[in-house]
Amino acid sequence: GKEAEAEAETADDEPKITPGLFRPDLPTYSMDEVKKHKTPESRIWVVYEHGVYDITEFVEIHPGGSKRIMLAAGGSIAPFWKLYAQHKEQFVYQLLEQHRIGNLSEKDASQEKAKSANISDPYANEPERHPSLIVRSKQPFTAEPPLELLAESMITPTDLFYKRHHLPVPRIDLDTYKVEVNTSLHQDKKPKHELSLSLDDIKHKYPKHTVMAAIQCAGNRRDEMTAIKPVKGGKWDAGAISNATWSGALLSDVLAALPDIEILKKNMHNLHIEFVGLDQDPASATKYGASIPLEMALDPKNQVMLAYEMNG
Image (cartoon, rainbow, N blue to C red):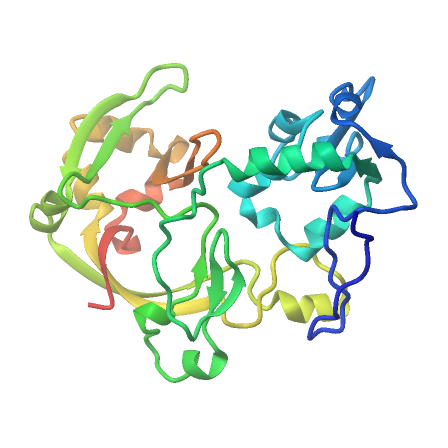
């Protein structure tokens, strides 16, 4: 097998780590032996390429939750990393190798690699991006514009707007697209279906509003922080911020049509409105989402909108 060795240094003079390379200084295990380690009592082992790892102590602090990482217990993490490609970062590789305890046999490593290769790629239909973007992660796609281009205009050109995806980009059929609005005043009751709006409905049933707004990733300028002290997270220079004009229907106008709007207004200090996206986790089908206080959404001065147009 291949011997582990440091690859060529990066532009930041940090040695790159390639996880899962064969290490002659460690013992070799079969897949049958790995499968015996699925619980904290027996220790939790996983494999990646030629590497065998004991992640027992890491499970409870896994950023994605213990339940998700336990799906790989006693098996390979490669299929999951294919779905959650954000793991393919140097700081993740470094963390993984800290838990290295051995090698997987050559035969079993080849079989596990073949199994992973048969999994369909959820990122196969990603849109094309502007070649000037500085790519920080290919899957999910993360990129920022060069600072000299970002500073050229108050309004960031649409193609140069920074990108920060957490999941594969969904394909949308505009002819069948619907925005569903459901309401519930009680967590233990099933939400009541209220509205189903097509894109044409949103464009023509409600007044069009336009607002200029900048968006910034919370990790913007992380490279500057890392220069002082190591910080976990993907690489960002100062370009994870962009400005655009957004046009659409005010959410307050859309919600005004709800039959229970007066009841919602009376309780709005205790309620949030949840936004559920079409982008979803390839493995669990969990939708990406966020929420804001209902009070914020109902006040037209806040200009919360269902935007359907960017930069005119």
